[in-house]
Amino acid sequence: MRKLDIPSIAGKEKEIYIECASDFVQKIEYAKTALAYAEEVEKCSKEYENYVPYDITNFPDIEIDDEHKVILTKVYDQKFAKENSIGRKYYNLIMENAKGRCPICGGGKLKNLDHFLPKSKYPLLCVTPINLIPTCRDCNMEKGAEVSRDYYEIPFHPYLEMMTDKWIECVLSFYLDGTFSIKFQNEYDAITNPDLWRKYSAHMRITDLDNTFSSRAEEELENVRGIYKNVFLSCGKDKLCEALKEVKNSAEKVDVNSWKSALYRALVRDCDEFCEWLYL
Image (tube, rainbow, N blue to C red; front, side, top):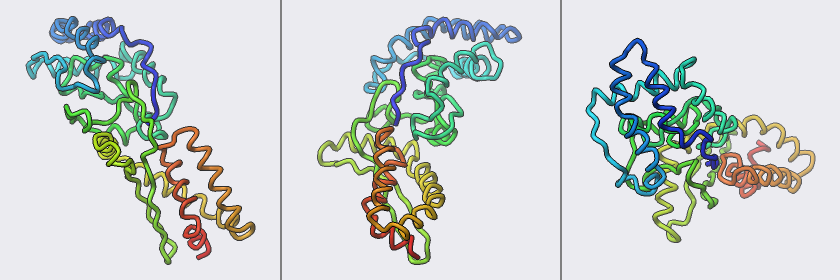
C-alpha cells in the first residue's frame, strides 16, 4: 500500500457538504433534508481521526432513518461524484492527490473514490475528504460496503497509516509443460505479532490482492520470458540472476510490498528452477 497525503481540502467538510446539498434545485425537499444534517456532518468529520481506523467501535453514532440516508448518499452520487456536478472539482482534487496510481494495489489505474467507512452505513461522511480513497476499479469493487469494527479485520487506511514491514511474498511453481502458477500471500511472522499478522491478512483478503497481484505478475512473466531466456542462453545463470536482482532492487525502492517486488524476490530466490523452466 502507498501512503497518501491527506487531501488539501480536508477540514472544509461542512462547506463542501452545504455547497453540494444546496444544489438540489429541482428537488427542494432533498436540499432541506440534507442541509438539516450539516452540523452533524461537521461534527462527525472533526471526530474522524479520533476513531478511524483504530477505534471505529466508538465512533459517534447518529440515528438517521433510512429515507434520509438515501437522500444523504445522493449528495455524493449526484452532487459530488457525478461528471459536471457542482462538487466534481473536489472529487477531482482528491483523485489527483493519488498521482495516478491506486494506493491499495500500487499500480491500478484510478477509477473511483472508495468510502473507507461505507456511505451506506456512514452517510454523514459521504463527502468527507479523509474518508474518500482514490482506487482502481478492482480494489474498489473487492472491498465492497462491509466494514468490521475490529481494527485488525479492516484494511489499512492510506491517509492515516503506513505499512512498514515487508510482508507480501510470491510463491512460484514452474511445470514441465512450460506453464507456471503464481500465488501471493502474507508472509509476516505470526509469532512475532499475531494481531499484526491478522491485520495484513485482512488487508489482503478484503482487497483481494492475491488475485489482483497474480494477474499482473502473470502478464509480466509472460512478457519477459523471451527476454530472460535470451539472457540465460547467451550469458548464463549468474548474469540472469544479476538482471533479476536489479529489477527487484529497483521495485523495492518504490514499494517493498508491490507485486513486482515480491515477484522478482521469488525469481531471484528460485533462479535455478526459473532457468530450468526457461530452457524448456
